[in-house]
Amino acid sequence: MKKAGKHIILGVTASIAIYKACELIRRLKECGFTVTVVMTKEAQELIKPIVFQSLSARRVYGGGIFDDPDAWEIEHISLAQAADLILIAPATANVIAKIAAGICDDLLTCTVCASKAGMLIAPAMNENMYNNKITQDNIRKLKSYGYRFIPPRKGMLACGKEGIGCLAQLEDIIKEVKKCF
Image 1 (cartoon, rainbow, N blue to C red):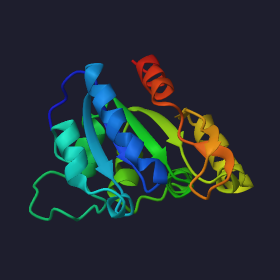
Image 2: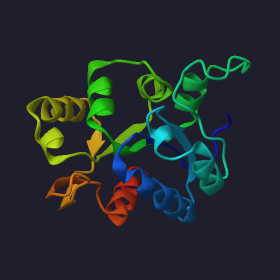
Image 3: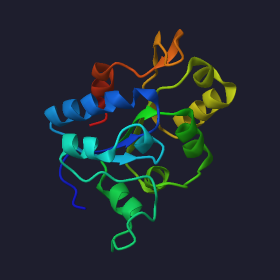
């Protein structure tokens, strides 16, 4: 995978806010970024990879690290080397916890671990999950390592209640991405 300018790996996880990643891809491309999507297996239960492939005009990488046994390149290494920035939006409590613990059990977490690129994470989850002491500790830990976060906003959550946990506005995500370059 060749590196061409401002290349963003967009990690997409299984938050209900996943549908906003579709518009995020379009807006990032309008800003001149190359976007390659890496989806967790759980995310693929909510939106099929073909949607992101059509929007990004690039191959979408699935959740498993051994999904393409015929490939000669080591995917997580080549993705990590190609990235100028890894943006995870939406980011679940699960993926934040795995990254904070150094768990590399899927393509996204392996790519994050192998990369020297900037890291930008936009959480989206239920308010109770976001405010959970463990989640907040994981966020603090990752921030201490230089990971940047775009905090969620208050709004109507998937559970039907209003609270903090909605994915940040796309304009705010784009603004933070631009700050990374």
